Amino acid sequence: SQACRGAITGDGIVAVGTLSFFSLTSGDGNTAVGHNSGEFATTADNCTFLGYNAGQGITGTKLTGNNNTAVGKDAGLLLQGAAHSNTIFGSGAGSALSNGDSNTIIGEDAGKGASGFYQSTYVGNGAGGAGTGNFQTALGVGALSGSHSGSGYNIAIGINAGNAITSGTHNTLIGREADVGAATDSNQLMIGS
Image (cartoon, rainbow, N blue to C red; front, side, top):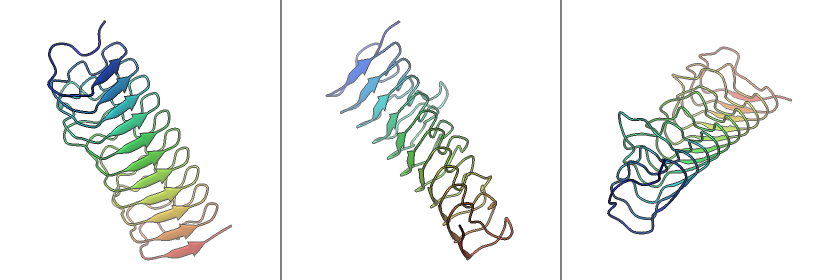
């Protein structure tokens, strides 16, 4: 068991843990601490992976994207290819995210089931769920955690707010369990308890 195999071109690389940055060949300013952390990153710069399997990636399409941060067990587990500028904190947070960029995901299992989404913010345990909509904002435990695969530009603030949305867009939902009337509704403003 080892960290960083072979010669690496770059400066400021820290790898602590079995197989951390094992595939890295070049990059600057990278830190991986934890078993399998950043294992399949190959040419990434300015990435920080802290925790068991944090930012591990896959054997097929290795991570080449820059500026990713994943902290927590399985956080950013499947990051790959050109995925970049993702900030992921929490056990299981963003664990299925593969090719997204510019996302902020904070909370245990936040954004856990979605594989590709862009410029979304999910804050709260389970927020964002398995949806793949882009430009989403979910704040609160379980907010926007339904299957919102065809949606985008939604804002859900509150515990379990916005969970009915599947393909609706441009909705603003504020309050505990505030939601749209139908899964495909768009351009709605709902204020609940």
